[in-house]
Structure formats: C-alpha cells, structure tokens
Amino acid sequence: MAQELVQLQPGTQVERWTIDKKLGEGGFGAVYKVTDPTGSYALKVEGVNEQIQVLKMEVFVLTELAKKCGRHFCKIEDKGRFGSFNYVVMTLVGKSLQDLRKEGPGQHMSMGTAISCGIQCLESLEDLHGIGYLHRDVKPGNYTIGRIELNEQRKVYILDFGMCRKFTNDQGVIRKPRAAAGFRGTVRYAPISCHMQRELCRKDDVETWIYMCVELTTGNLPWKNVQDMNAVGDYKRRCRAEPFIKELFGGCPREYVEILQYVDSLKYYDAPNYQMCYGLMRKAITSMNAQEFPYDWEKGPGGF
Image (cartoon, rainbow, N blue to C red; front, side):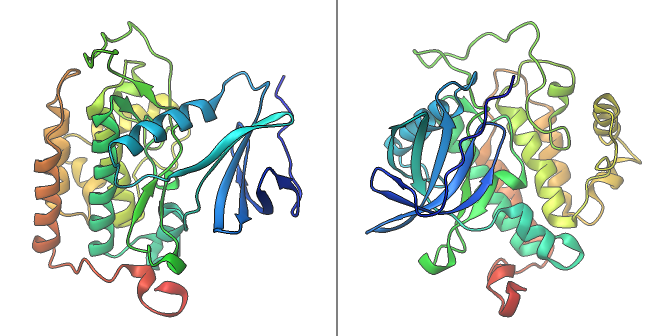
C-alpha cells in the first residue's frame, strides 16, 4: 500500500523556509521551490513512514561529496523532520538536460554542447565513484544546469542519489558482487549487466553515460520505442557489432565508439580510466569541428 505523498501548499512555513511552489514529484516524495531571506532553494520531502527512505541516502552521499569538494553537486542547506515528513533543503538548479535536449532543433543538442555537457556528466560520476558510490540511474533527467540568474548556465549538476549503492566496504575495498541483483534504473539507459541482473560496477555507470551522450548528440537511441525489457537488452548487445553499431552511433563522433569499446573491455573490479575518456571527448570536439561554447541555451531568445 503506497503512502500518501506529502503535499504542501504555497505560503506554508517549514521551519525557516516558505513554500513557493511545487517543482515536481517522484515515487517517494515531492520537490518544492522554497525561499528564506538568503534566496531560493529546493526542498525535498518524504513521509517518515515511507518503506524506502531515499532522502537518507541523498543526504549521506551529498555530505560525503561536500567533504571532497565534488564539482557537480547540490549543497545541503538544511535538513530535518517536520510533522509527518523528513525534508532536505538544497541548491536550486535549472532545467534538466532532458528538457534542454528536447528544446533543441531535432530534439537534440548541438555537437559542441552535447560533448561538453557529456564531459561534465562524467566528471560527476568520477567524483561519486571516488567516494565509493555507484549512481545506478544515470540519465538526462537526472542532470540539470545551474540557474541562469546565478550565471551558472554552463555548470552541470547531477541529482537523485536514491538508487546509489556503496560498492566499497568501510576499508575502501570493493565488495564482492552478489550472485543476483534486481533490475535498477531506467530501461532505456540501463547497462547490459542490468538486463542480466548482474551486480553493477563503475563501468556500468559509464556505459549508461555513453547511451545518454548519444541521445544528447542525436536525439535518438535505436531501442527507445521497444517496450520489452529483455528485447531492449538484446538490442544493446546487437549494437556492439557491425552493421548495427552504426545504428547506435550514426551522427556521433567516432570517439564515442572508442569509449564504448574501451568500457566493454573492463571487468567488475576495474577502475575506468576517466582521463582517457575526457581526452577522447575533447578530441571529438576537434574532430567534429564543433564549438564548445556558448551552450545552446545561451544563444538568445528561447535559448536556441
């Protein structure tokens, strides 16, 4: 039996925060825009009786990242319990990469913007992996840009750590994989290991990131209209070889193919070579003769 989602009306006070408006809701609670005398922030709420306490993970991960000066993460301003819900107040961000992609001509970003955003998205995963966590739900809807009024429209943030899993133990040693792991994440972007119900590792976050980069670049993933989860897994496997590899990477820099082939060669315990991936992404900007800046949404009325 699902819990009633906490609903807060505009004007309501939660401690020192005034609810401005609802920004959206996920499976476990809602997100609101709130203000206090210092400015505008995002407030996430979750009923205290929720079976799965997502906010706890979110707070823990963001707190750990803050200690390490993570480059692409919201800052926690406040957290606590108020009535029947837990809440966390964090940096308010701008539009998601998913929305920005759909606003572009052909529902994709320009080459330079897509590659450059891709680099920032991978940096955020490198930082997350650096504190021993996998994200396990990498997708354009979980990345946003900063707010234009704060002049952060070139900064990419990663959000939503509710599906994170710690892959190291307290000594920093990688945990042994479980024999079987349930499906986690979003079918469209999930790595092949996920379809096989295998324990995920760092390379899986990076594989998912590549699918996301393809979609930002071309507006398309060949399996996007396939409903059956197993069929999607088969499609992804097929796209590893000729002639189908062209179906996945048509219109993309060939460096994307190189990165995928490298990632596919990695094993469970391997640390991805992020620097090599950034190098290939930078090379792609040059080889495609693309312009990194300004980003598409900086280019005048309506952003494009």
